[in-house]
Image (cartoon, rainbow, N blue to C red):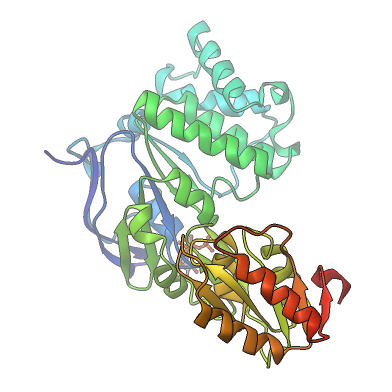
Length: 370
Ligand SMILES: Nc1ncnc2c1ncn2[C@@H]1O[C@H](COP(=O)(O)OP(=O)(O)OP(=O)(O)O)[C@@H](O)[C@H]1O
């Protein structure tokens, strides 16, 4: 069976010049697709092209097996609502008026709203927490509030597909989460398909069913978050040279400090992460250990430390690893000792700490006092 929304060899661009070629998207009802990629790569261009805001150069978009080119504006507005970044031209319109324009496909020529339409406008505004803005002039609200008003407008249009261009960009963290939760709920409960561009990779990872990487002449990758959010793929997509991406956290670390490390951080169980970042901010290179490879500290240590002494998960630290760590510790002048609890498998870290004291090294509890 054909996918509910699909594009076939779609080529998009401006003035007849292709920007991205042969885009093949396949989406079922109720799926969320996020477009990610660097600035200027063409995410908005794709979104504008699949919603007829921009004429495609070639290829076809199908919604429920109907070709987009065969739909008139009214047909299209039953199917798709769009929240683009372009400024809406509104004069003397209240926020409620703007949301109410989402009902125009259902009203007569004069755009007169029925009582049912008014209820739907109010429901949509309440859903995104903007009902209290209803009488405010749309041009006199904040960017984040405007973003939410436009989402309410898209919702009350009752489409089968919602297309959003960077919907979270002006929102604070509470409203980012709220917006994505609303989209997720609508996808699940109302079977609405969502296609959006996102710069926040951590959010894209959590909210999307499918992810498309946009860069260069062709779509570089299309797959599940598990397939796409990998260190190599994201580093290559954004050409990261001054930091690194951690797929487990969905976050980035700054550049590793360079130079010869004279600081040893004894850590584990999450006690090291703050210290590693504090050292990075001060541009002090360091080594760390002995960490198990399933330790949360290990995730950040790999990106920020010059060297990590590491043991396999769930096993006692072996003597040979301890010996190597001790040798390296002896060549340092400062030890940051983060641990205050030891168990059977990391007991050797207590010995490292005691050796640091007996070697007369400077032993401190935190990088903050360096
Ligand atoms: N109206 C236009 N005419 C010609 N070129 C355009 C037009 N709008 C955008 N472009 C160009 O098309 C390319 C892709 O732009 P687009 O806005 O689609 O990128 P984007 O991935 O959405 O970027 P961002 O993440 O910065 O929002 C850019 O090089 C841009 O300069």
